[in-house]
Every structure is written in structure tokens, then in C-alpha cells.
Amino acid sequence: EWVRDEALFAAWCEGQTGYPIVDAAMLQINRTGFMHNRLRMIVASFLTKDLGIDWREGERYFARHLNDYDQSANNGGWQWAASTGCDAQPYFRIFNPVTQSKRFDPDGAFIRMYLPALAKLSATDIHAPWLAKPVELATAGVVLGRDYPMPIVDHATARVATLERFVLGFLSQHTIALIEAAADLAAHDAADEHARDCRQGISPALAYRVTYDAASHAAQHHAGIFLVGPVCTASGKHC
Image (cartoon, rainbow, N blue to C red; front, side, top):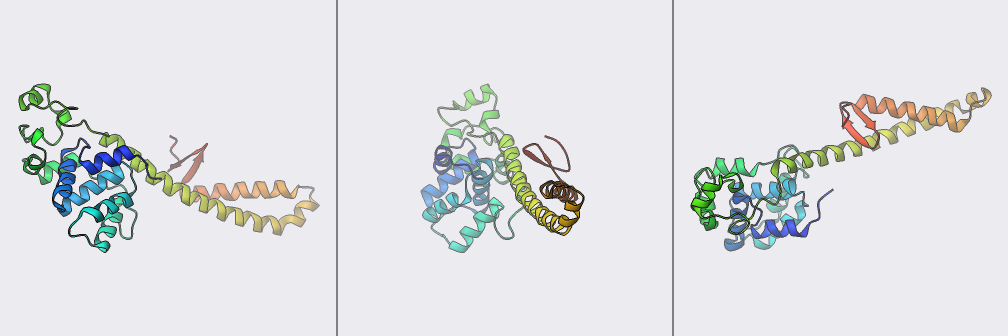
């Protein structure tokens, strides 16, 4: 289920997320109508997997701002990034914006072009200003929260939340399917044994319940899915 948060979406659109590579990329598209493909993947991953916002919001934003907009490429690219479309990237591939920044803008040249407030930070600190030492920020004349925002989300925390969202969504859908299949099997077995149960003095409703529970448990166990109270966990591990 997607997160609905207008403030988070606005911060992404305006280049105010607190992640320099994301913000520089969004300022580029806002000012020029262009964004490099690598940056498109970074900001799309950030919107859908760090912020948990519906990929269609980002797709629409790109459609309005890209001067090289192509419906098929834009729509397919966003679904790929969000791990929701055909032949999409695995849901567990979540771009780390700091790692991506260091890898593809190692000296911070692109960031400095669009975020002059950070221009005096070193090539090490510019990718994650909130991790810089106070003396380094002071030397560069940067006051976080005034000259540049603090991160609006913690990437590590957001990553865990995204993985849980995908896994629990997947498990819930398949658990429902398994239980429905088990119920059908139980109903069939109960109908076949109805007469015998009645002859033995067993309530048909009780016989159905017992058969249903047994079939459900077997189906869940076979799939490696266990229901623990209200929580589904994989491999039988309790939360």
C-alpha cells in the first residue's frame, strides 16, 4: 500500500529531500526539462522506495516536465523502478542515494552545479552533509536546516519498511489464495464424508471446521508460510 503524504511528495518535487544527488537531479529537471537516465533511476527509486509514494505520481510529474517525454519509456521506466511492472527490477533492489552519488558524481561536480550552498563542502562530505563534522560544515558555511535541509527520511529505516511492505503484501496475497484453495478442498471432503459423519454422530459443521483447519495448515506449511497471530512471516520465523 502506497504512502500518501503531500509534504513528502512536494519535497521530492522541489529538490528539498536532504539528499544532494536527489535534489540536484530534481532541480535539473525543473530548470532544464532534462535528466540523465541514471538520475531518473535514482529519484524514481527514492520516491517509490524511500518515501513509499505511488510511482504514478512520479510518472505524471515527469510527463509534465521532461522535454524528451515518451509515454512508453516513462511509464515502463517508472514501473521498473517501483518493482511493479512487467520485467521490473526485484523489489529488494533499493538504490542507496548516497552510494549512487559517490559512484556517479564522485567529486560532487553535478551537485555543486545545482546546489551552490553545498559547493564548499569536500568531495567526501557533499554526498551526505548530515554526516559531516560540525567543523567541516562551519568551514563550508553550511548550516543544516537553514542553508540545506536535513534528510526527510532515513534511508536505512525506509529500506526496511519497503522490504516489509513488499514481503507482507506478497505473503498476504498468496496466503489468501492458499486458504481459499484449502477451503475448497475442505468443502469437497466434507461433502463426501457428510453421510459418514452423521452416522458417527459428528456435527457436519464441526467436521467441516476440522477439515478446513487441517487443510489450511497443510497448505501453509507446504508453502513455507506460517500465520502467527495477525502477522505473516516467512520460513516460520516469528517477528
